[in-house]
Length: 296
Image (cartoon, rainbow, N blue to C red; front, side, top):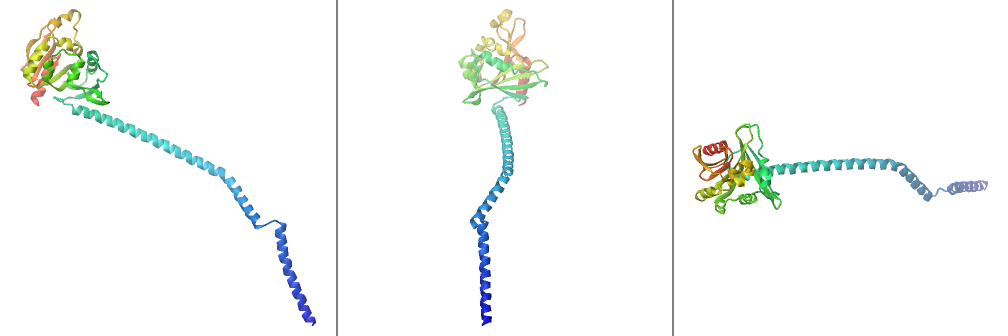
């Protein structure tokens, strides 16, 4: 009986001990206010503090990346604009080359230039535009062709012969103008180290109509063309306005020449072939062009 009593007492003690441990844990949790919710809140607070400390570094990195990206974008834009401008310049050069290639030249040349006559309204402007291209070069016996353009709806277009003659207010007859084709050349020929000579070259559709038309134009040709050839028709040389053209043979071609009061030839025109004639102030220019046409 005593043993049974002892066993009961031991069991009671074990139970009491177990209860005391659980109670102690519960009390500890309560005493330290370490609830699950507070633990979670504490962890969140810790993460927030870590984020605060990390943000300045991340912000600086983002700023650096943005600056690098912006710099790359600006450099890319500049490079892109450069290549676009370069391409446009190349296209303009190609267009200019095509413009001169598309013009009928009659004769080969050493140089070609295109001048813009869009704003030219009279003979003074046109003659200055042309004479500005009479420039000496180092190459002797060289020919330079001058193509006159004007903008038509912003597109550079070769100035038609009728428009050219109308701009300079020529006194050539309508019959003469109608006998000419729309193809014409303006150029210079340098036969020495001196200033090149200017020449006009025209194509006739009807020689029998063109030739008498030229004879009729002789009366006023010097007055119409003197600004291009820089011929003085004033003061003492004014008598040249009443002078008459004379016959002359150059390289077996019939030529008409106008002499000044000193007997110097100042203006020539010659049919260098059956369908072409030139007007110039230099006899060597006529010889050169005849020679070129004979070898073509």
